[in-house]
Length: 446
Ligand SMILES: Nc1ccc(Br)nc1
Image 1 (spheres, rainbow, N blue to C red):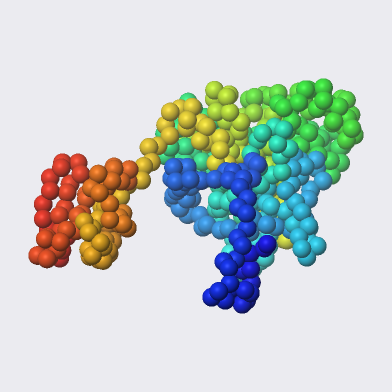
Image 2 (cartoon, helix red, strand yellow):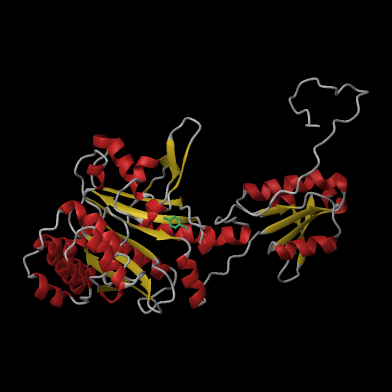
């Protein structure tokens, strides 16, 4: 019989039998496939990581923004064959609207910039830390959600913006104890591809598709890449030239091939010169094979990698000068990066530099008998009013239990409220590291 929780009268009169409760159904206590809970220990690590994201963003003068996790599906529908599109976590809501759990933050940011229009003055320097989703066939057992830190600069066409963003990531790595011997950035520009495609008169509208196919160069066999490029109409000759250019690892070599007049070389030379000034030259290297897997990049692209080659890309980003206009906004230049919360933790574990993050409570306060529980509450309130953390024991417990609890919460002091002391306006204060115990007047407690 369903429980009558309609709040109505039902048969709940004084003499009526107690309502038949539902037979308890054991629910699955695990979170949905591909998602995570954050119990205290994991939450402390997440807060520490996000705290560093936010502190670096603050150091660089960026403002925090956020957007709904749920967006119109249209924001992410791009026809360039991206994986992010194939794995879109999308559905029709009860209002028959096509919606999606955001797979990334950049389109939402672009939407908000357009919405703000002339009410905001450029350049905008915005950052966000948000959960992003993908519907991954669980056969690969990969996650379906992660948190991404994004920093974006809107309204700056110069490469100074990309240089600034990479500097922010370097600053973040250094804060965590990660050095240029651990990680690096592979940097290129999609203008390299653009210049090659243009020399073969390949139409602009194929640019996004070609980039997405080439981004798979490390993930699928070379022959498959060539076949896919052929399918979209790239000639064999152009394919050979593309793959040749993509294997270039030095700017001098690239300049030999492309010549010195193109934007690609100019942008990359400026970026490497700025890197010198920022002091992170040892962190970056040119690699023409870097195109990144998002269709909207139009210029410099970069990705953070671990030099041991054990992990997937740590972060990635680039310039996306056309995204806002494709959403019907003005032609505003933009660049940004995404930095996931998973690979970085694997890297910290690999390096053995995960921080020790324990619950730290300054005081544990307890009453020795029931009628002093109120007194213990007032002691806790006084200490909290002074900005001290207090774990207040909420029941009368034996001292053995209290000491065990004090150890678990790493308390520095035990404040005991006992009747004989309380009558004299005193409490017992035990220093839990030295063991020293003194009596303190309540109004002198600090
Ligand atoms: N885009 C995206 C979303 C969620 C995860 Br996990 N990985 C990538």
